[in-house]
Amino acid sequence: PVEMSSDSKALAALEVAIAADPAACASLAAVVAALKQAASGGSSTVPISATASQLIPVAAALAAKPTADGVAKPTANGAGPAVPAVDYKETDVVCKSSTPISFSTPRGKFECKLLSDGRCVLEQRTPKGVTAYAVRPEHVRRVMRLDIGDSNNTTYLMVAIDPNHALVAGKQKMQTLLAQVRGKDAPATIQLLDANGHCPGRDVYEARLRDQPPGRDGAPNPAGAMAALVELFFGLCAASKRCAVPKTDRVFAGVGGRGCVKANHKFNQGHLFMFDDGLAFAERPALWLPWEDVADLQLQRADGGSGTFDLRVTPEGGEPPHEFANVSREELEEVQRYLAKRCSEAGGEDEDGAAGAGAGGAAG
Image (cartoon, rainbow, N blue to C red):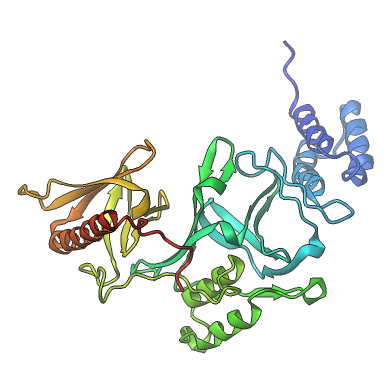
């Protein structure tokens, strides 16, 4: 077979990008024709390959732009796995984040948009296309603020979604979203689009920003600003609710006093937070394991001479167990008390015929 030249390869790739939406990329037609003519001449001084390569992301961005009526066009060949399109118009957006928000799950930086019907849209635009997810407030099971206490002052904001409405990316289902912010980050802000309608929860959001303790140089605290933003976009402000935080005074404190223990999930180091109604793990994988969904709990290596022990959590419904390994033995006594109290409460609920301790949405 004849090997294609670098110019031919670049031009072919550019034509593929344009073919995604020829009408949207019509402005590039004359440039492509000129490049083809230069390539056919054989002695052109025009850097054909480099120019075509630079135009590929331009074509992809044009193809990904909203249509004339403002409907976004997430594509199957977007930045991540194929996701269903999110059908909305730009005139439906009543509020959006001023800058993209960093997420661990799904991974990347996403613009957050709040629609007039209450949906939160996470949208990522790259030269490869658009990836978008939508979450309805009634599908939000719980929202948690997880302060790690590391040298970067990292805080995670975890949004647990009803499993029946998990977000789909290819073959993967995401029941948990995880945003992250560090102490040195600029505080997250929003842009209100009053012309498109009222932003639900706006007054509560603004009041919470005013109530936040200041960060560096008197600016808003980055973690507090991110928590307020997440509360706004996922419906908590509109419902006058707040992110749940670990109750270190009466549920679990841990050696570090932050309501968590350090643990490994397979090859990933992370933090396991103990709530009164379940366990949250961050960063990878982001997990929310409410007690009502747990079939079995086991402490392993707790009686040995090792300096660490493991906690094995088996969900209901036949899902594989989660093993949180290499927890420091310093944490063992309090972990045992925490689990014993939880098992005792669960047993009492079973005897009374009451329902399990559900998350009940976001904490008030």
